[in-house]
Amino acid sequence: MGAPAWRWALRAARLPVGGGRAPTAPRRDPGYGLAASFADSASSGSRDEALRDKRARILSRGLPKQKPIEGVKQVVVCASGKGGVGKSTTAVNIALALAANDSTKEVGLLDADVYGPSIPKMMNLKGNPELTPKNLMRPLKNYGIACMSMGFLVEETAPVVWRGLMVMSAVEKLLRQVDWGQLDYLVIDMPPGTGDVQLSVSQNIPIAGAVIISTPQDVALLDARKGADMFRKVQVPVLGLVQNMSVFQCPKCKHETHIFGADGVRDLAKTLGLDILGDVPLHVNIRETCDLGQPVVISQPQSDAPARRYKVGMILNPEEVSVSIGEVIVDLLERTESSQKSESISTSLTGDGTAEQE
Image (cartoon, rainbow, N blue to C red; front, side, top):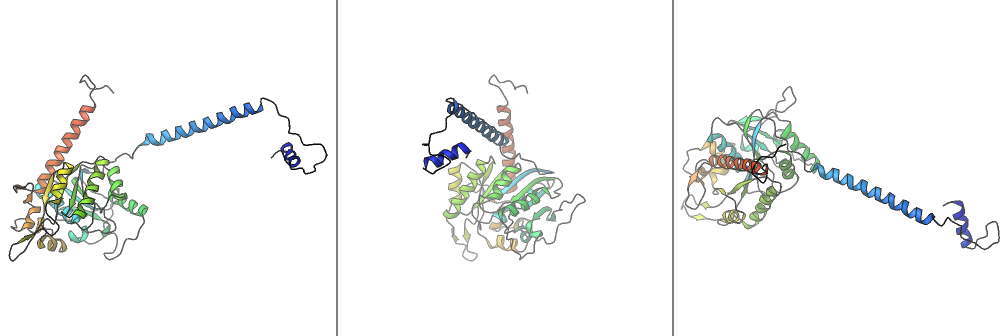
């Protein structure tokens, strides 16, 4: 507060300050208030304009630009909204089925579940990855599949007690700091849910398609739908759904029981307008082979057991027309890629059907 204003405040409070005259307000130029008003308005306007410019610059950046993983042609993610529905088991067998479908294709498998990595156990792999001269990790390999997992970097029984930022950093390293070589397909086993990892992976690398795995149980279907909707929101094509643990057949009397319900995933697929990629039973062979690190696709390729459906018996419709799940996914990937190319061409055309000049 300046000296004149300070004196006026004291006089208004009837405090004696150097004289006995009645307090009078300090005189001001009649144009002072108007000028001050204009100055404040101009200052406020410039601040608003600066904020608008800053906001526009931030929005213009948009989402982070997707950067392909070096050496990887197509990425397929296996996801589920709910844990415990057999997602990792399905991801392992899908990777092996893709390799079995065409022996000339190279396939990799990435375990993006930092808190609960399952790939080392299911693929019978142990040890730490070696480093290349470029300081990149070399994937461990079994059954012809290049694998990378957080389970290779920590003790088997050690819990990973990390906050979100550390998990995101680990996932980024698993994606970018691995020497994948040349892969035709990289299958990513995603963690359950629709959180940071799913969003980050979806926005940072181009994904050819997502496979949603669920049991027919209502509680699992609620989260499976959320998973499918999330991928659609981030522009990732959903290839279809796999109904896992669909039926249990008694090994003695052959009676079939739908422990988790019947056809729940089929009904969800119809609601969402998606394909059913497979109908896998609850069978002891599937569980035993994964626990032994010998997945059913590789250990029992010609088995007549229901577990064979992973290899050549994935039920694709009620008439039980069956083909390899590897064939199904390859066909869907090709159709999706063709559709995306067609859309890209159509959006680059002008109204009169001629290509725009850049």
